[in-house]
Length: 229
Image (tube, rainbow, N blue to C red):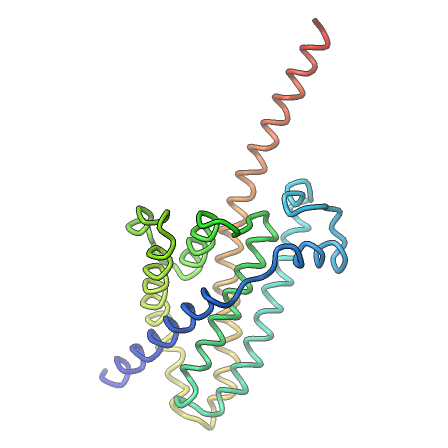
């Protein structure tokens, strides 16, 4: 029990520092990501709001590719750093937090949600919390004060995630096997969080798409009625 408590504290501290560092340093450039969507994946859009006119199945396919890409990078990092066993668990978690946040940011942009304003940044971390299985309703009152909101969410994520992974990661106390264990755990960690984040953004995307469609329908109806007069 004592060893697991120590391991959970170490994982919680590692995730907390990792996500805090990622919050301060990791940011996908929306303009460059838009160019990637157009040039590499052939999306016929001129801005990120154009994704609301792209077939949802096409966005879903790209989301799967981005999640799998993050999983592969995380697995490679986990295998390399995992050779050190418990000695490298904190730097491993820091890198894993960065990979996870980059994946979540890509999914956010893909489904049409930028994060250039404080409110949009708060929404991004709400998605990150959702991916971690954290209910942050108590923190929503502070959403407008981003410098207070995000650190509280990161703390909640670290607490929740440390409990989720401590049993699985406990195998890393054995350095001989930790390379394979580290690779596998990182791989499935990004997959689980990526899929939860995808579900979050997809649901919001469909809600907004329906609102846009309904608004466009009303405009067309008004236009038709005006022509009949």
